Length: 92
Image 1: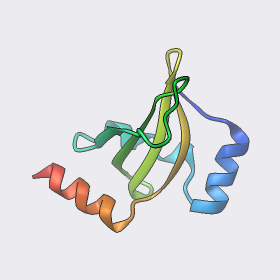
Image 2: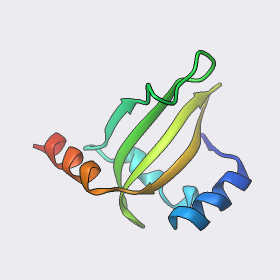
Image 3: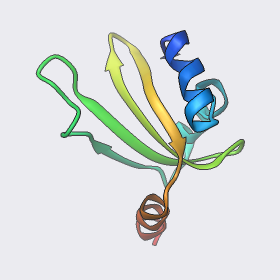
Image 4: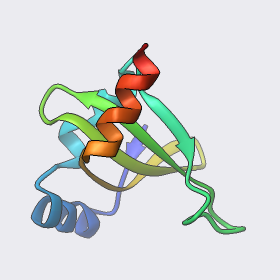
């Protein structure tokens, strides 16, 4: 199950023009690129990033963590150029 903080969701919509609720299909992308976010992880929370395709937004970059049996979304935005390049390299 996907979960998120509602106030964070509203901030991401305002700042990045993407809605957590409309990009969940990026997690189903067979070519999605997953990697650990070492820079923002802590001893208490390991974060991960996904570059994946969403029907609503195209390529998106999503930061998330696992919390109990849930995937907790932290932030997201439309993919930047380097992310698109990374995704295309992975698809080859």
